[in-house]
Amino acid sequence: MLTAILAVTGLSCDKKLTREKAAKMIVAKMGYPQMVEEEVPLKWWSWDTKRLKERGWIVAEYSPTVLSGLRFSVTDEGRKQGLRRWAREYRHGVAGKVCDKVFVGVTGMKDVQKGIKEVEFAWTYANQTPFCSLLFSKSRYMKGDTIRGRCRFALYDDGWRIEEIEEGERR
Image 1 (spheres, rainbow, N blue to C red):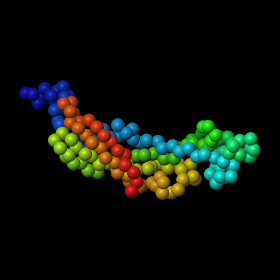
Image 2 (image 1 turned 135 degrees about the vertical axis):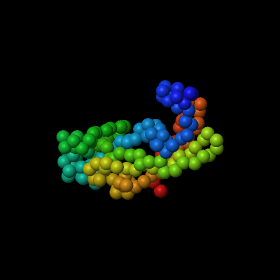
Image 3 (image 1 turned 180 degrees about the vertical axis):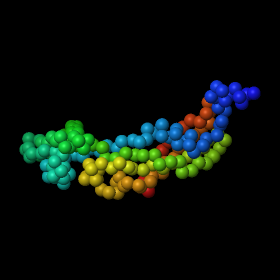
Image 4 (image 1 turned 90 degrees about the horizontal axis):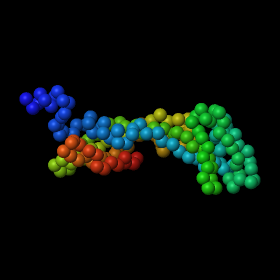
């Protein structure tokens, strides 16, 4: 009788943490996929400035009145690539999306103690942009490189909750 009432009302007394449930909670907590942006300071003599100019993403001119020696603007083509200008204190440059952090899946679960589980998960860099491949080393945002994270879940009266989460680093 109680089971029928729970089924009709949509309530669940299931206190089991499955890989699927853990994955949904991790994705919601971390906001995957996450956009990764980078800022690149520009100077008149830098290789980054040269590469961006060659692609037609910025227009730059030498200016002795500016500390970096560079006065520049992002072109329409650069804006199509998602680039924008940034400036802080005595530095300026371009910023833009380089890739996304994408959740791969739960790779393992273990009981730490009653009502506490540690969950290992994986994520990767994906959707690298032309800005990424132009300015950053291949190893920094390597497509397909899997990074391991850890998450600690605790069982409360209303179900499982994330108490701690670490995204991890490339090894």
